[in-house]
Image 1: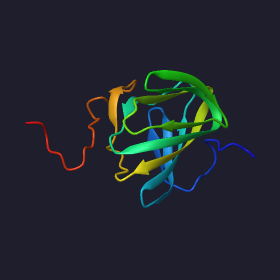
Image 2: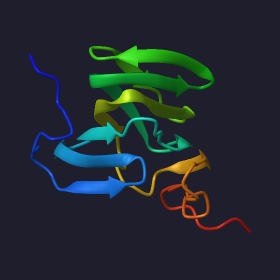
Image 3: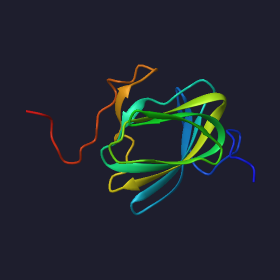
Image 4: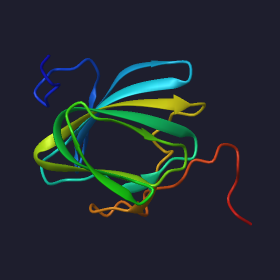
Length: 137
């Protein structure tokens, strides 16, 4: 079975990011499936989510993944769980890194990203989504 590569057309609208791109593949009650492509030598922000867990399956390339301070090398075929609230990051090696991500939770929104470190200057643009909570008083 061939790996999903960044040249595959996919089925969703591609959202470009400084590290590569992602596209939504499927969604339903309580889940969202995405495909991410992290370009060679790039990485996503060090982040956590307050409303979702994620299951990652590496479908192409390789690199490293950090989850709650534990770093490990990953390659095609590996599967990982990113628990709700876990601090995590994925980094691509020389061939890039393709991930199919299954998000599970009650709120599956792009603004549920709390960035803790970012190579692309997006820390201030990151605001954790905390449901109906208002600003601190």
